[in-house]
Amino acid sequence: MSFLQALVNGALAGAVLALPALGFNTVYAVLRFPNFAIASIATAGAYAGWIANVLWGWPAPPALLVAFVAAGAVGATTDALALRPLRLRGPLTAAIGSVALDLLLQNALRFGFGNDPRGYDLPVFRDWRLAGISIGPQEVEDAGLAFITMTALFLLLRFTRIGKTMRAVADNASLAESKGIDPARVAWIANGVGFGLAGIGGTLVALDTSLDPLTGFRVLLSIFAAAVVGGLGSIPGAIAGAFMIGIGEELSTLALAPTYRTAIGFLAILVVLSFRPRGLLGERAY
Amino acid sequence: MLDYLASLAVFAGIYALLGLGLNLVWGLGGMVNLGLAGFFAIGAYASALSALHLHFPLVAASFFAMLLAAAAGALLAVVTARLKGDYLAIVTLGFAEVIQLIAGNEIWLTNGTDGLSAIPAPGRGTLSPLAFDLSSAGIVWLVLAAIAAAFGRLSAAPYGRVLRAIREDEMVARIAGKNVLSFKIGAFSASAAVMGLAGSLYAAYDGYVAPDSFDVLVTLLVVLALTAGGVGRMQGALVGAVLVVVLTEGTRFFGGLLPGLSALQVASLRQGVIGLFLLLLLRVKPDGLLPERIRVHPLDDEGETTR
Image (cartoon, rainbow over all chains, first blue to last red):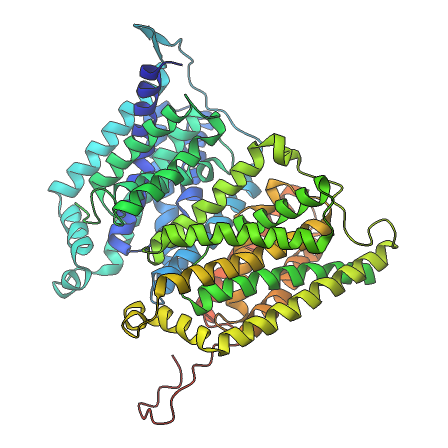
């Protein structure tokens, strides 16, 4: 594979990775703890998208909307039920609780759907070939849908009252509360939006690889890496980090066995944190 | 029945060892280590490989396992020295993932996902299965008693006091003239060594190691054990480990009674119950059954006896 081909593949993968990374950082920015359950919530979104696509026969864009709603609902509800009380004990207790929640959700999916991989019902196109580089139309469509979602998130944060509220809480939670912003309500919104993005991301990842209860877990390390490299809780950081990790992982396949691509993320975390302990763009949310 | 109980005792002892290791670095030092499955794996593979290829006896293989795990722990401690809670949780969890990835892919060394089998252990083949289980349980619990005594001593000694001081406020410890970094490296590598030892005993007893045995579930079970028993106290790890084994085995028993479910569904129910149990425990009894007792200076009239 040529260098240029790896670069193109990496950019397309980065666009997809940006969605769960954005979700992870949105939740972190508002609630101040890493929610590891994002892996299984993204998988839950992918299953919801699969139900819409295969069982109901819907095309990809509305199926992604179903994934958004389902994952957002699962993420926000489980957070309110299971993790909110733990946050009182500190971010670390909530983080450990979220690992337990991830195990619970992953096994709930396994209980319902089994371990066998599922496929989506989408037309298969031949790759386009441009100047010696082959590009899959599916990957381009995925990246395009990811861009549309990111733009929508940006508009939401920038121009709406909900977005402004979220930014205020991310900036200074106690000041926001003293101004009459209800923290529980913001938590519902941030979780709904953040995990909704993860649900779309999970579906796009599943479209590209395969759908089984571990789909989200397999990209967890890449999500961490994108979020941490860009800066935990930073929205632009998640996007920048996702592209760096996506491209880095693809470039690594030129030299290493492809199975090690996710290890690149771990390496990137260590290198970046050694020099910039708060990530490349810092922890400022927006 | 007796051999079943003996094998449960072996697993409880191994979980307790992992719990003791985690308690040293997390309970006393306040450094979260969600990568313990990685150290466990390093120990298990180091022991299994040295026993299979170099014909090391269990004692030598275990020392080799502890050495390698401690080296990995020291390295991780140096790299993460400046990181606090959240980042440390992410990096250590990632570390365990990478170790599992390596175990699954370096086929020339680890035999990949097929795993290593026929790992020799003292008494396997020469003793009856029951005698082997009993003697293994004896070995594991003797090792456990020794480590628990050593860590209990360490925890009461000035060394443990400094670790607790670092946990409560790193800056204060530094102002008191303590070399925080060397304490962190020491605690991380000592805890990793114990986890490596647990891995070595596991490989020898089970006779088989594969990457699947070292997934995040192991880490969660040990966190569960430590949280159940009480973070910060060495007895907590022991009590918690027994509880975890009772829980995992109890769900196996009840899972068999549920009608109309496939084996996969029962297995997923059992794993799900473990997650649910940890969530409930963190909610209801976050300090565990044996909460850490913080000794208060007699002249401290703030009267704060509980933290």
